[in-house]
Image 1 (cartoon, one colour):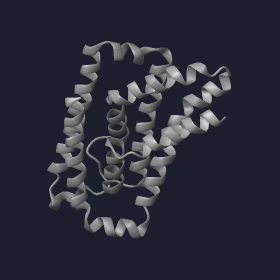
Image 2 (cartoon, rainbow, N blue to C red; image 1 turned 30 degrees about the vertical axis):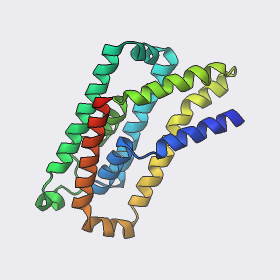
Image 3 (cartoon, rainbow, N blue to C red; image 1 turned 180 degrees about the vertical axis):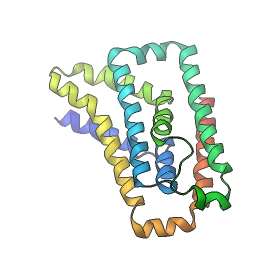
Length: 198
């Protein structure tokens, strides 16, 4: 059980690192609603589930060992992040109120695509599952290891969403929403460029 706690701690630290997942949650919660934030979190968690399944059945190792396939996934992910960033940067201040409560694209799909086309997450799971899960004998413990990343990610993102949805925070954020949109858009573009460059 100690090994699992360490594993869960590593997953929590990974979830807490600011990145594209955090950016898309912030954006969809702020511009949409708490519901939009949770739908985005479900998309991110679904993609994480797919990463875990691919790692368990060995496809992630195949992707890692095939440079052309890995590069294609990396470039798709990079292009999608840059596209999202440009969309967020292009929203005009005078249309901000009009679009409040709406999102450019479905939040579930946006969340899933951001995580699914991040090859670094896939490779991370190859490393973790090849060394940790393979050594676990009990089927129940293997299942626990497999669902831990999703539970940790969903819990952390839910905490962020709940904090952002508090009335006092919402009131303050409404006044700086445009600047936050620009910041998130610029951050996504930079993350996309960084992912594309490897």
